[in-house]
Length: 530
Image (cartoon, rainbow, N blue to C red):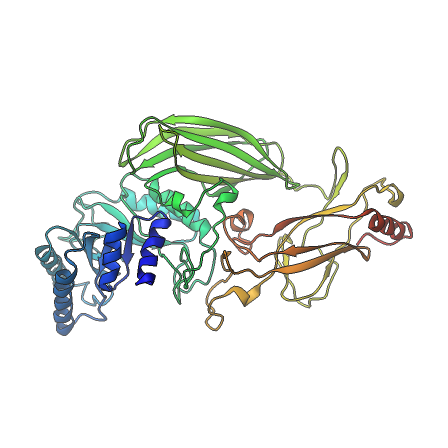
């Protein structure tokens, strides 16, 4: 009972107001706790295996008994009869379609107080329904945007889209997504924080869409797309790195603020970022409100600063999407990563929700050797190593990432800047990004590996490592890397598709005076900088 209650409370803590429990007549305590804690339920009937006379008798009997048993649970707002046309092997015939229609009429007769959905479809094949829902699993922003726009454009009374056609076409049934996600079955164990944010933003952007069902609440054996792990342990999403206190609940909130923009795009230094602002208002009245915005920037050295900020007044229409004008800001004239952060603040000064998008500001590559006001910067790419103890380390084709499992070492070579002599070195520091390499150690089911696997960061499960750094054989420091993380903080790995979601920690090491003196001596003796 505590486990059942825990799942209902978990959903509420994540900002959800409804669950669709997939193809299952649940234990009565499930509906009890949904009633008690205040969470709406879409009630799925179990899916059959094939359409036969016996199946039809069994299904009808189960429907009658399920409605009779659970009719009095106020949390239930809809009966969903079939899922993805499973078992409806005659659904391509008029007779098969009319039988589904008969079951819709039966469900309405058994319970005239609730909505009835004929089939929660992935094949665009409704017959007659009170909810016009559809499914999609797409892991690409532009494809998601095109897909959602197409569904919206083709939804209107009389349209045959998402219906079997013929005598069965759209009515005024509300449009709702009843399954979506970026990581589908058997795609592997990956970060969901990135795709969940932009997919949900796309769904909330459209007035016609009245709701959504993210897949899913927790990981299962063959789908690793949950808000939490299989055992309900927490995952890290990383949103608060960009907007303080932001969590999954901000994206699932009744009120929503967003930009009609990619989760990340590349613009030139000094370019202007422009995107339409919008507010989706389904919560309590908020009156005259404000969208607060702020642009933060991390430069090529890892230094963070706020570039600009402002406010945009908005009076959101309830149960609608309200456009709030265009947000237009000039980006810094240098390479780096910008974040456009948003807060929706109501008339009482309360923050209703948060959101953000990132912008990769990139023009010419940063030079190998760069003079700064107080020092020189000398760069090398992680993949440009000169020696390694690993026989076959993994190096991305761009040379921007090096990784290898287990213990070992890697060595790089660099040159002092022109005109800089070893004796003139007054300080030496290294700044780089590094993380542990967990490999398959973080995979929940290592015996059943499918698709691409780079598990999302977890709150209580870490895979740390220690790295010792030396220059010309002189140890200048050791750092503890707490994990091999992958979540929304891995902006550039997602954007550039380099083991999406992965990132490291910013490491700063400076040579102590004695170590610096030893390095100077070795360089003066003709040793290369390694």
